[in-house]
Length: 543
Image 1 (cartoon, one colour):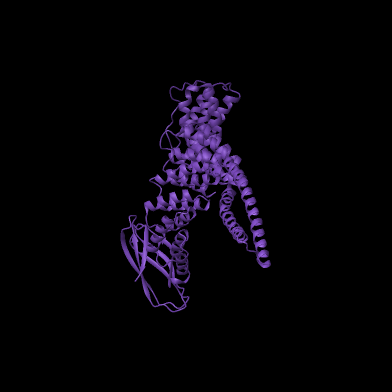
Image 2 (cartoon, one colour; image 1 turned 90 degrees about the horizontal axis):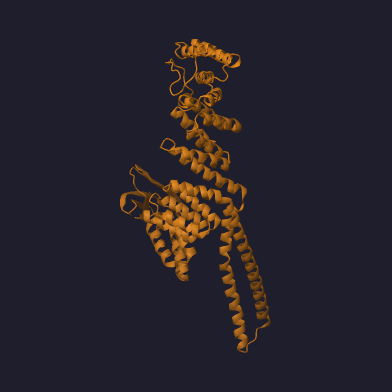
């Protein structure tokens, strides 16, 4: 209901929720082309009472004249033979407009227009403020979770202001917040047809996004495959590795024994027992792995189909949203996430390419999307987004770190090594940087170098530095983290010099952090704040 409260507050700020305060006014009768027969004495009497009410100087006098006008009009309609005179209904509507009573006015004006359609423009002038009151009540009832009453109030507001796009758009927002996307979509389409200028443009955008989100929420609630499809696909894609390793191991064992026998050799009883045990274990494990792979393949296909069907309305409305608002990166990223859930690679690749080239997509958003795709088992598209993030900010540590794992999954050793070297240049004392280089050497098949960097990550970095937060701003920049002594010996005092960079990697300003002597296992927090802004990345070096 937080979003509802914000909508109500926004309306209140714009003055739409407040009922019209009474003020002395000037009487205006019906205007051309509205032609009404007002010669009957009861109609004339009611007009006089309404005129005096509008021009009254005191509230009590106003209320009295309004009451008298109502009594005269009711008499004219009930016993005065004026039930088919549009003037009686028109001025009864005018009475309700003065009270104000939107429901009564709507009913009376509808009867008047049925008899005198030429009065439509005249009537509209009195209905517009009443529609605002009805809309205000609809929003109040919505925020009070009185759904049915809110629906009736919205219907009244629409009846009073049939050409006001704001009413159906707010109705779309209400149904979306209630988890009824089909009804929300109906009123979204109705409101969208009425938006011809900028008056309701922002509300249309909000309603369009909320409808897409409502369909997405419904899909997750109704279809478990929407949430599980990615996990099943990742599990399926992980099976070829173990199968290949166990197949190679079994083949090697069989080849060794076959070679021994071909050369006339014989296995000792113990060696034969070991061979039979190991080959049986591997054969059974391979069979189980292949069964699991087959089962996961079937499950992944079924879940992808189910997820696609459940998400189809959400996908459609997100696409429609992006057709109207192509620069909205949040919606584009959400559509990418949903496409990943369905497992449709072609559609996903198209979205990723579009997002990578979008000028409005910034490095943090692209990095977050890349991280999500990597977790969903799409390292290739993830790498594309992360590379786009680094094109915008070449020293974005988070993008570099995620890209390490994407490249490792893709087996791109040369590219991984380049990224790892960049990380070491930015954070030379972070164990994660050393582990990134270990992954690069692992892909290159260099076991000694892999072991060396793993050892460096574990205990080789005496001053173990981890930066947990970087907060850039227009006027100030801060970093926070900690230094630990991971050795078994005391470490002397030292200093770290932080350099803060712009998107091109140019140093904007520097700040030193003094690190005191550290006992074995000791820890020292880092809290730096520089009263300068504009930086998007950082690096450090030990002095």
